[in-house]
Length: 254
Image (tube, rainbow, N blue to C red; front, top):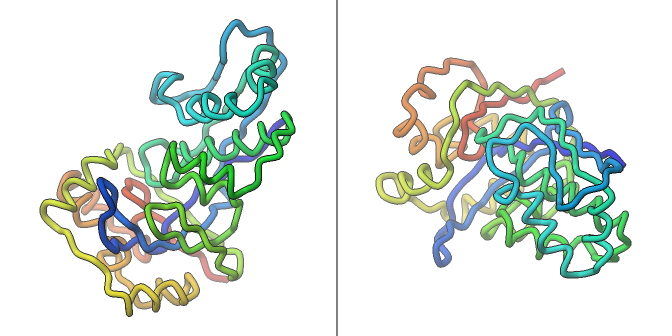
């Protein structure tokens, strides 16, 4: 079994408030069809859960492993299956780049396990498990091309619009999401108004980008360039900052 695990970009990303230790988001997530990892389950006699791939972290810190730990509680089949199969990930999505690669891998793995082990978990149930691992995971669970994402990432509503041709540029900078949110909270904190929230969520992605500057589209951009000033030097017309970075993207028009 092999599946594509797609990247995402944030057309806009605004902060709406705080909940416990989390920031509540108002964002449009869009799948990048041209950029994806590939996840495969391969026959293998494994003494323990085996994950192959060019990752920047140890296996037990990987989102796929965390998903495995939670899913094996639902059925013995999961643990038994991965005694006879290993997980291989062909990585193309840059890590620490605001493209959701780890969350996408996690969600795609969960969807694959749900199918092959016949767990019969609904998308809602998978998303409820996924949010325990990462805020972006539910978006990838639902497999929408475009969606409005609010709350701490758990509220995902499909947004119907044309499929977008997205070009991504990722500089050689690894952004620390936790540090960027900390910088935002301490120096640049602001909240989107209810009026502007509703306006953005109802605009098509191209319409939103037509009147938002790079600074306006993503509340985390100013915090990111405060920590990583080299990002400010990236002079690419019509490119916007995705997530907590370091990637930039633009929508290509016919």
